[in-house]
Image (cartoon, rainbow, N blue to C red; front, side, top):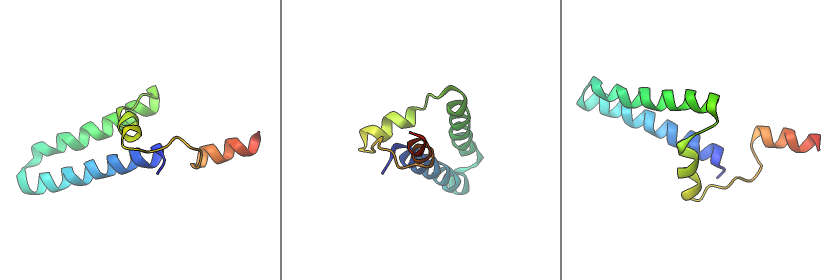
Length: 76
C-alpha cells in the first residue's frame, strides 16, 4: 500500500469512528471529525501531514503508483 492510500485509509477510518461515537455517546465527538477535516485542509496548503509519518511507520511505501506519479513518469 502506498503512503497516499494509507493516509486516505486513516482519515476515512477516523471519520467513520467519529460517526459511530457521535451516534452512541454524543455530539461532542464531532470535534474528532472536525480535527480530521482541518488536518486534511492544512496539509493541502502546507504539505505537512502527521499521518504520512504514521503510514510510513506502519509499512506503507513511497513507491510511484498514484495518479500524480504516473503522470510525472510519462513526462521524463
